[in-house]
Amino acid sequence: MTPVTPITIALALVAMVAVCFLRPGRALGLIIALMLIWPEYLRIPIGLAQMSAPRMAALALIVRMALTKDTPRLRLGWIDALPVLGWVWDLGANFAEGAGSTQIVYMVGRFFDTVCMYYVARLSIRSARDIADLYPMLAVTAAAMGVLGAWEAITASSYYERLYAYGGQAWFDKQAEFRYGFLRARASTAHAIYFGMAMIVVTGMIYAMRGVARRTWLWLGAVLLGVLGAISSLSSGPQLGLAILCITSVFYFMKPMIKPAIVGLVLLCVLVEMASNRHFYQLIDYLALNSETAWYRGRLLEVAVSHLPDYWLFGVGDKWPHHWGLEIDTRLHVDVVNHFILVALNGGVPSLLCFVGTIIGAMRAASRIPARSCSPALKQMGFGLVCVTIGLAGASMSVGLFGPPLLLTYMLLGLMVSLPGLAEHPRLVRPAPGVRTEPRASAARPSEVLPA
Image 1: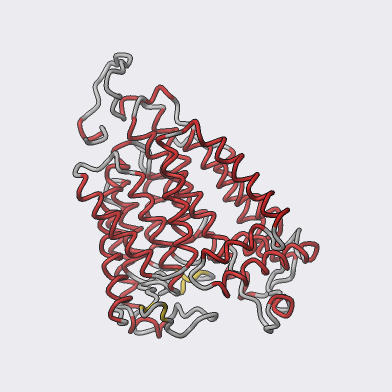
Image 2: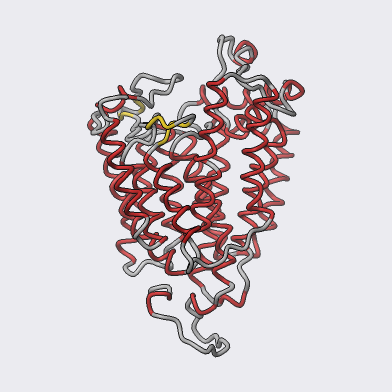
């Protein structure tokens, strides 16, 4: 037990009580705020798991929603089974590979970061009011962390610096790093790139919820401060994700161009592959803040594919493939800076298929909101969240996700899968101007309608 463990316990207990009384959307927003404002890597040892404050609060909210009689019935589909199936396979695969107790405990903990976070979002977002409740908490979190990140980058000092000694130090980069004269801000996370990735997800969600905002200038301020926080990490991955988010969002205003753009991108990759002496995916090196680290990522992908027969079914267990380092850059260890490869190493190709299937299923759900919903704000949010997911997937090619970025990823996926369920209740969303809807026996209460 560390000197800050009592503080973590106190915060966890307060959050657990709060989520039992707050409306579901606000409770979910509180969990997101907690995981970024207080370091998620500060854990409480409970049995086989190391429980963080967000983990405990999420469990409390799931239990509350499951036991509340007036909670709308959750209609589960094949997408909802994939996160559970992926985690069960990971656990079984590690047993099959003879992994030690440390690795098994790690895999048990991943249940709370993946399955638990997915379902806390699925259960919490059941009406338009829940989305309207979630938005202010996200906006405040993005604004606060954006300011703290910028302050850290500019002044080279952090309010979280005293907490670093109690956990969260990433083995691959323990020293403070400067780029262009600024400190790479890590704020409450274990590494600067984790902070940048978390800010991309939170800021992207706020951007997608612009139809919920009552005051445009407050929404814009939260987005800009969130972007500032992502930039303060000075990491190529988050900035690549931010660029992808901006580019894909433009297609909301020219949807007929989406398919031609995809075809054009594929043809461009083929042309580069044929005309260049380098593979098309290696050209991303020129877009990175540090071309040397970008080169490593491309080489890691090649080596991982060449060794696929070694881990394709059950992963590697606790026998981490440090021998790959000699093939990549002659080092004696390997840094798996690719979340898709990391997932495969934990549970083989079956685990990777579950993860990718969840992403595709969530994007498909968010992009196919029924036309009868007649809600421009809901459709706009669905498209925006798809853009966030594409940006996150692109950025995940440069980092393995741990801590807040991992938790937020599964929350994002659960939220997206919930959107079509909102569209099945037309009384919960505001009709578009000039669109007539069928009369209903009872009108919606003002609090259940998306605000202007």
